[in-house]
Amino acid sequence: HEVSLLMSVVPKMTKPAAEAVAKAAKHLRDAFKNGSIRTTVSSRQTIKVANYYAFLKAHAGASAPMKKAFDKIIYGRGSDDHEVDAMRAVVRNVVNLDNL
Figure 1 (cartoon, helix red, strand yellow):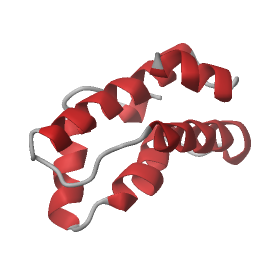
Figure 2 (cartoon, helix red, strand yellow):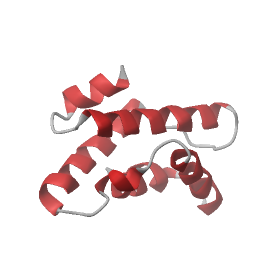
Figure 3 (tube, rainbow, N blue to C red):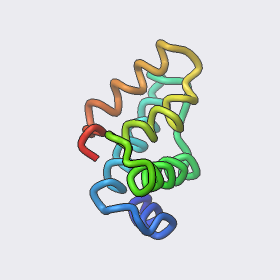
Figure 4 (cartoon, rainbow, N blue to C red):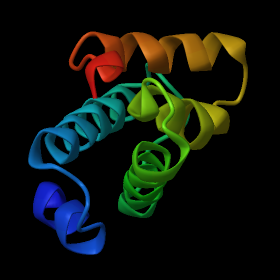
Protein backbone atom coordinates (compact mmCIF):
# COMPACT_ATOMS: atom_id res chain seq x y z
CA HIS A 1 0.00 0.00 0.00
CA GLU A 2 2.57 2.62 1.07
CA VAL A 3 4.98 1.63 -1.73
CA SER A 4 2.34 2.26 -4.40
CA LEU A 5 1.33 5.52 -2.68
CA LEU A 6 4.91 6.80 -2.72
CA MET A 7 5.42 5.81 -6.35
CA SER A 8 2.15 7.42 -7.46
CA VAL A 9 2.73 10.69 -5.59
CA VAL A 10 6.43 10.89 -6.51
CA PRO A 11 6.76 9.42 -10.03
CA LYS A 12 10.58 9.61 -9.96
CA MET A 13 10.67 7.34 -6.92
CA THR A 14 12.08 3.94 -7.83
CA LYS A 15 10.45 0.81 -6.47
CA PRO A 16 13.53 -0.18 -4.38
CA ALA A 17 13.65 3.31 -2.86
CA ALA A 18 9.91 3.30 -2.13
CA GLU A 19 10.19 -0.16 -0.58
CA ALA A 20 13.05 1.03 1.64
CA VAL A 21 11.07 4.04 2.87
CA ALA A 22 7.98 1.92 3.54
CA LYS A 23 9.98 -0.77 5.34
CA ALA A 24 11.81 1.77 7.51
CA ALA A 25 8.54 3.56 8.31
CA LYS A 26 6.84 0.30 9.29
CA HIS A 27 9.65 -0.58 11.68
CA LEU A 28 9.68 2.93 13.15
CA ARG A 29 5.92 2.68 13.70
CA ASP A 30 6.39 -0.70 15.39
CA ALA A 31 9.11 0.80 17.61
CA PHE A 32 6.72 3.61 18.54
CA LYS A 33 3.96 1.11 19.38
CA ASN A 34 6.25 -0.93 21.63
CA GLY A 35 7.60 2.19 23.37
CA SER A 36 11.15 2.08 22.00
CA ILE A 37 10.77 5.58 20.52
CA ARG A 38 8.39 8.46 21.26
CA THR A 39 7.94 9.74 17.70
CA THR A 40 6.06 7.91 14.96
CA VAL A 41 6.12 8.33 11.19
CA SER A 42 3.06 9.27 9.15
CA SER A 43 2.38 8.60 5.49
CA ARG A 44 2.64 12.36 4.97
CA GLN A 45 6.20 12.24 6.28
CA THR A 46 7.13 9.31 4.05
CA ILE A 47 5.85 11.34 1.08
CA LYS A 48 8.04 14.26 2.21
CA VAL A 49 11.00 11.87 2.38
CA ALA A 50 10.23 10.61 -1.13
CA ASN A 51 9.92 14.13 -2.53
CA TYR A 52 13.12 15.35 -0.90
CA TYR A 53 14.97 12.20 -1.99
CA ALA A 54 13.81 12.67 -5.58
CA PHE A 55 14.84 16.33 -5.48
CA LEU A 56 18.29 15.57 -4.08
CA LYS A 57 18.84 12.76 -6.54
CA ALA A 58 17.71 14.74 -9.61
CA HIS A 59 18.86 18.26 -8.89
CA ALA A 60 21.43 18.42 -6.14
CA GLY A 61 23.59 15.47 -7.15
CA ALA A 62 23.94 14.72 -3.46
CA SER A 63 25.64 11.59 -2.26
CA ALA A 64 23.43 9.29 -0.17
CA PRO A 65 20.24 11.27 -0.92
CA MET A 66 17.98 8.85 0.99
CA LYS A 67 20.13 9.13 4.10
CA LYS A 68 19.98 12.93 3.83
CA ALA A 69 16.19 12.81 3.39
CA PHE A 70 15.80 10.68 6.53
CA ASP A 71 18.19 12.96 8.44
CA LYS A 72 16.15 16.04 7.62
CA ILE A 73 12.59 14.77 7.67
CA ILE A 74 12.42 11.72 9.94
CA TYR A 75 15.29 12.02 12.41
CA GLY A 76 14.80 15.78 12.63
CA ARG A 77 11.55 15.06 14.47
CA GLY A 78 13.22 13.11 17.27
CA SER A 79 12.71 14.68 20.69
CA ASP A 80 16.35 14.36 21.77
CA ASP A 81 19.67 12.82 20.74
CA HIS A 82 18.87 9.54 22.51
CA GLU A 83 15.64 9.12 20.54
CA VAL A 84 17.31 10.05 17.26
CA ASP A 85 19.98 7.42 17.93
CA ALA A 86 17.24 4.86 18.65
CA MET A 87 15.42 5.81 15.44
CA ARG A 88 18.62 5.49 13.41
CA ALA A 89 19.27 2.06 14.94
CA VAL A 90 15.78 0.83 14.02
CA VAL A 91 16.23 1.92 10.41
CA ARG A 92 19.82 0.69 10.15
CA ASN A 93 18.67 -2.78 11.19
CA VAL A 94 16.21 -3.06 8.28
CA VAL A 95 17.53 -0.98 5.35
CA ASN A 96 20.79 0.50 4.13
CA LEU A 97 20.01 4.11 3.26
CA ASP A 98 23.53 4.74 2.00
CA ASN A 99 22.91 2.61 -1.11
CA LEU A 100 19.85 4.54 -2.32
